[in-house]
Each structure stands twice: as structure tokens, then as C-alpha cells.
Image (cartoon, rainbow, N blue to C red):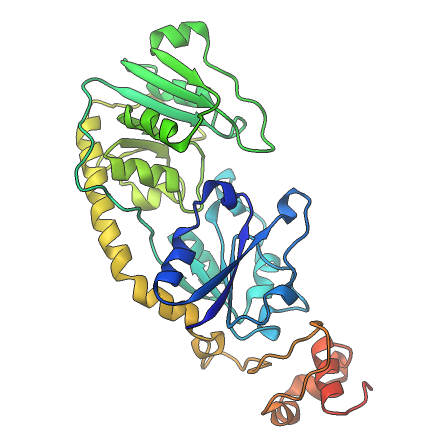
Amino acid sequence: MARIAYVDHSFHQTTRSTDFLPDLLTRHGHVVERFWDEAWRGGAPIEFERVASHEVVLMFQSYCPPRGRYFRHLHPNVIYVPMLDQFGLWRGPHQNLSAFWEPFQGSKVLNFSSAAHCMTGGFGIVSHVVRYYRPVSPAPLPWREGLHGFFWVRRELELPWRTIRRLIENTRFDSFHVHMATDPGTPEAEQPSSEEMARYNITLSTWFESKAELDACLDRANIYFAPRPEEGIGQSFLEAMARGQCVVAPDQGTMNEYIVAGDNGLLYDVHDPRPLDLSQAARLGANARESARAGRERWEQAESALVRYVLTPSEALYEGRYRHPLPERIPVALGGPAPPPSGLRRLVREHAIFRSTRFMWHPMVQAARQWLGRSHG
């Protein structure tokens, strides 16, 4: 049994979209303590001191401010879980991200996106990639005759109603529900015109009293329009696939890692949206559900390997690449004296960083010398 510190973006405290991972670790017999990071909205970050005593430090999207250059200097088993959408790759080429990834060198990354996995590996960081699927109900929802759409306007500046209108301009809908509730910090949504309301039989909402009320509205749809141009995992469209709905999504990650256009859904160019052919929606929805069912089986088969990866100290996965400066944890800047770890004297004697005047003021060097009774000079 391992004690695992789980640092997470506090917005997920509302959506519960990341609960599946700590639930999985708990089910495998480990103790997970959750830490909700509020730094994204001006609150205090989770300082590393609060999590350093755990056997595993797992940071989901949010991460503790690094103390020193690398997380590996602070703890032997740090795992970071990035979300693909945090990098905004759908907007176009970005400048080099090496500065972002530098603190994670020598630590581990868990990816839920193949694109993010390739990015991480390109920076020389060990990565484990797995594709998540939600549970699929034993019986599919009956397919409603006609076309019934659902779209949640979450990002007015990135994926507004007018983009969806362009996709469906040649299609008749028997009903179309538009939920107008944008994400925190984004502009208020512009609602469909009165002409569009009549043409597509649109109903509107801005609030649901409960998750059950939202689910009932979703269940009435058979065409689901993904709400964002890019996803970290994409729980909302994965849920739609598991329902057997035809998902229409931008041709970006992670949607295009799950959807094969014309086979189990439809993809479009978010920068140049054009009218889509929805005549095969029933077939696409059935295939989406089948791919979700098969994907869920693969996810469950991959659980044991995922847990082993989480528990394996980072150094074991970098064997043959380079020596970790601190094979045993040294609580740099974590407060209070500590006895010299076993093997530290040999490490100081052998490793060049402790003999170099260039690094004489590095906190790791100072701490090691202090514990060994040496002077800082």
C-alpha cells in the first residue's frame, strides 16, 4: 500500500472529471490524499512541502511550484499528468516548450493523449500513455427518429454557436437544444437569432437544477456537438460516444484520437467550418458506442500496468540515460535538519556537481554539505 498525494486543479472539484484516477488507485489498495490547487484563480498554490512525505506525488494538470531546477531533486517519485488543451496547440505553431518541461526532466509523465505523449517523449521525459473510456451501459438508448442536436456553448471566443450553425446550415433538425453557460473567465455567449430558433427548432437553457436534469436533456439528443476546440481527455464527448450518439467535433486532439471521421463520428476544420452530411448519423452513433465499449475493455485491461507505472520510482525508468543526482530524497527547502541519507557521502565524492565551483551555491549542494558537516565554501 502506498500513500499517494494527488494535486489537482480545483475546477475539477466541481466537474469531478478526474475522479476516475484516484478512484482507480484506491480500488487497487492505495491511500490517496487529494490537494485542490486554487492558484489558477488567484488562490494559494499547493507547496511541495505539503506533499513531500507521501511515497508518490501525482500532479494532475496543476503542479506544485518547483523548488530548485528539477522535481527529481525533491522526491524520487513525481508524476505529472498534463492536459493537451492546456498548451492550445489547436491555435497553431507554438514557441519551444522546453522551459515548461524542464522541471519534469528525470520525473515521470502520465499522458491521456498520444499527441501529448509524443511531445513529452520529444523532450526526453519518460511517459506512459493510456486512452481512457467511460463505462458503457448494457443497453443502448433507443435511436430517436429524425435529428436532435445538443450543443453546450462553453467557449464563445473559440467555438461559438455560429460555428455550429455553419455546420448544419443544409440540415433539418427536429429539435436542437443549446445550453448557454460559458466557462469561468470567458465572455457571455451570443444566442441564436429568432430566425435560427425557428428554423432548427431550438430550445435554450442557461442552468440545470441537477445533473439528472442535464442528463435527461442529453438523452433526448442523437447528435452531440463537442463544446471545445481541443480537450485534455474529453469526458463530455466520450460520454456521448458511450450513449451511442453521433459526435461532431473539431479535427483536433483529443477528439481525433478517438473519432475516425465517417466511421464512428464526424470531424471538421474548426478554422474553416463547412456544412456536414448527417445522413449517416444513426450508423455513426452505433459505431461510436461499439468503439466506446471496446475501448473500455482495453482501459480496464491496462489498469495494472498503469498502477505499476505510478508506483515505480523515476530512477528505474531512466536507467542507462543519466544518473539521477539524488537517488534518495533530500528535503531541500522543506525545513528542519535531517540526518545524512545512506549513500550520500559516496554520491558527493563521485558526482561532479559537488566538486564544481560553478554549482557551489546551488541549494542542493549547500544542503548536502551542511548535512555532512562541510562548509558552504
